[in-house]
Length: 94
Image 1: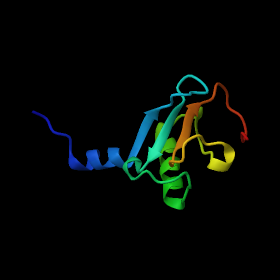
Image 2: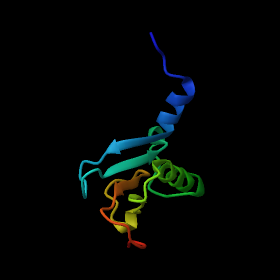
Image 3: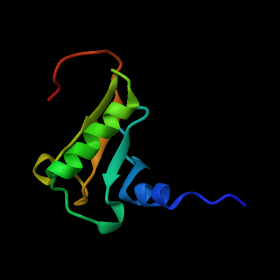
Image 4: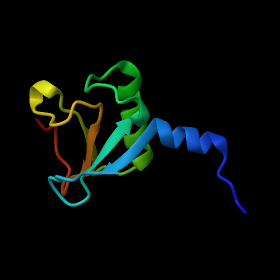
């Protein structure tokens, strides 16, 4: 019987990728830091760095990570980032 290392389990609880029930495009998922803590949709330096590291690990120029706050119509008040890919490379998207 194989058991996953504790560090892997703790990391999985700290940062999860969830299926988006209302995707904008194919492959649109949610990146949820500290999922078990149910923290509100307010980004801080630590969670911002997590999202950046996640994007860097993807190692793909088409990979994108976005954030929308409650004031920008986030539908659920829990911390999450929007994750997807673009069909073409481009500049800053608003």
